[in-house]
Structure formats: C-alpha cells, structure tokens
Amino acid sequence: MTSCAQAIKAWETKHEQKAEDAKEINITCQIPPLTKLDNSLSALKCCQKLSMSTNMIDRMAGLGGMSNLRILSMGRNNIKKIEKLDEVCGTLEQLWMSYNQISSLEGLSELNNLTTLFLSNNSIKSFSELDKIACLPNLKDVIFVGNPMYDDISRKEGRILILKHLPQVTKIDGDLVKPSERDEAASLPVE
Image 1: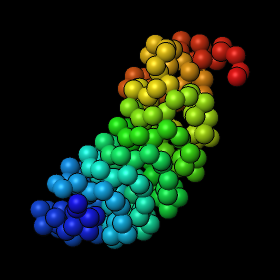
Image 2 (image 1 turned 45 degrees about the vertical axis):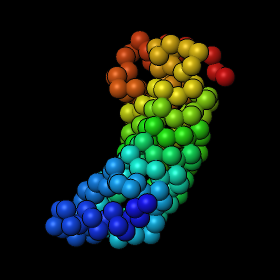
Image 3 (image 1 turned 90 degrees about the vertical axis):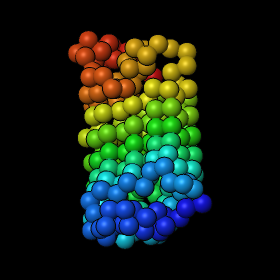
Image 4 (image 1 turned 180 degrees about the vertical axis):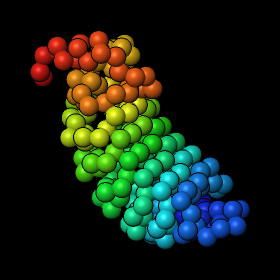
C-alpha cells in the first residue's frame, strides 16, 4: 500500500515542486492505493485543495497543520465516519465524500464555513440525519442522491425533505432550488 508520504513524494517528483508550497495537491488513484492518512499531510501548509479520491482510505485523520485547506475531496474510498475535521473547521468550505460508506452526519456541525457538501451514494438512511448540519449557516450546495434515505420516495420528494431540514440550501443534487419547492417544504408539518 502507498503511504501519504510516498504519494506526496511522487507528486513532488511529477510536478517538480515542493508539496509544502503547493496550493493544490492531487493524490487520487494511487497504485497501490492509499489506505491510511498520516501526519505527513501536516506539511501541506499552503494547500487549499487536497484530492485523495479513489483510494482505499478507511479513516479520516492527519489534517492538523493544513491551515489553508478549503476543499477536501475524499470520494470513492472506504470511509465510514466523518471525523477529525476540527483542525480545519475554520477554513474548510467544500467537502466531497461521495461513494463512501458514511451513515451519520456527525462530525460536521463545527464547519461553519462549509458551503458545499457532496455525500451521494453513501449509507445515510434517514432525513433526520440532516438536522445535525442544519446549524451550518453557509451551506448552500448539497448532494445526497443515492443514499438509502431516498429508497422509498421520488427524487422530487427527497428534495422537499432536504429543504425541510436544510432551508438555507440553494442547490440540491445538482439542481437549483425552485421557489415552489421552498413553499412546499415550508408547508410540511414539523416532525
């Protein structure tokens, strides 16, 4: 398996640049794949966008020191739980974690600058999970399609339920929210 340190070193060789000075680091699709995050990521102090999608990472860790991180892309891994983002909660604006095994939205409530959350094709079973992120004032763009919470309803019904729980969003599953959808969500009874 490839370590983060090895992936970063390979990135530096390919780009002929020190990773610690780069604003964007892409270590997706490593062969062999990344399986764990480690403290070597803390050296990426200038990094604003870190892409580690399409690997076999199963746990989140090691983001301390990444004081400029705005976009974290970890889709298509084996992550089951969103955690250890407190060290980037002041800067993180976008979190892309589609195609993992996430079943809970715990671990996101401190990300006050989060504008974009992509969590399609995970294991979220209930729309009530969205209440855990309703406190995020800047959240505008979400993708949840492909989660079990959509199993027994139409995509349109899912959009209305998302709006009921997250009235601040302006885009759901790739489409802008319509005023008629807002009205419909507002008319739903309080659970």
